[in-house]
Image (cartoon, rainbow, N blue to C red):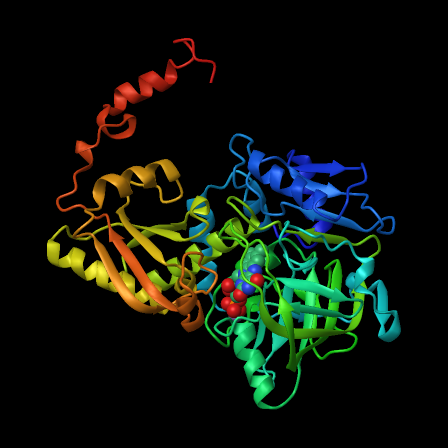
Length: 487
Ligand SMILES: Cc1cc2nc3c(=O)[nH]c(=O)nc-3n(C[C@H](O)[C@H](O)[C@H](O)COP(=O)(O)O)c2cc1C
Ligand SMILES: [Mn+2]
């Protein structure tokens, strides 16, 4: 396991494997920068590093596509894999199953260090000026410039017993104020409520441009009172180093690029959004709390990572999809559900979770039991909250392979008897098709499609893998170039 300890080391590694595109021509933070990021997603092109941004001081940079997928052969998930300490060639199954293993381990809490490179430069009080940084205007139709799309918001319960890391979008208001999505069911919302009950604003630290694993653990759905930082430690087998902030009693990853410190108001709200969201559409504007900024610290020549959320595949899908699948797989294992693997298809804008099952029995009774168990375990877990549609398939299918999943879903699920609907399930309010009332109630119908065929027999599949005798398969692969194929 290779633990990359800062963003710049990650950028060097991306460059080494042809996954980085440095852009030296000047680009505009107003729609141009995000347009380049979006086109890079569409082409699965290298991650753009913007070295020169219009009206922004020299040296301040932006990185896009931190967790984008790649067009290069064998390197499809390389950015995600490297970020998590795995080989750039790691496949989905290895990434998800390794992460699920880490979630099941005992946490390793962070180590506090006295000084951190993230505090090379400090702005406090009247010097605080968020507008010096290249926060982009991302989508036509957004309600403002978005300062945070990939950074981690650190908050703590009033009694200090739980430190939560999460990613939530944050919009720029002016020199020292921002506003962001504080969703009540998310941990930031639960902790904000605790501070409100004490009639106090909630201290926060926003750490941007952290070592590449941090966003993955920040987007991970863990139970309440579990610190994401501890699970990152368990994953790498060593603690992450954190440094105390200057104006709030919180700690941030010591090597990150930019830190915004301050408090989230318990009384004042402003209109946040709309914004182009991960489902692929412009969402809604709603009142959200004001984030008042007390200090900004940053590395020399800071790099601000940016996600241009929208139609798949972008970083929200790869990051959330990967960690949701891992968190759900860990839950399924904990409850002895015979899951082989699990994947949240990026192309579904992470609305479809595929669980492959290694069935102990094919009886109708046991399949019925598995569907019921899947519903109980998945929809009750924090990660399952975001998942509206689940597909259960036998483990001849690779759940990360869209072609295989589409085929199996189309041919194995009876529209009448294999769709199991569950009404009034808690839901993430950003799921696109929800009605206004469902978004307000954060409750909607969810579905499990049972694709576990009765008496499923692999030998009935007509494919290269299953219907061609092994010796002939080997022969054909060996002779492939001899037949005249160049690849
Ligand atoms: C790029 C990106 C953007 C995200 N934006 C938001 C957001 O604006 N609001 C939100 O509630 N969750 C957002 N998420 C998902 C949360 O980070 C995720 O649900 C996480 O588990 C929340 O942390 P918690 O489990 O500690 O509550 C985003 C995730 C990513 C990767
Ligand atoms: Mn949490």
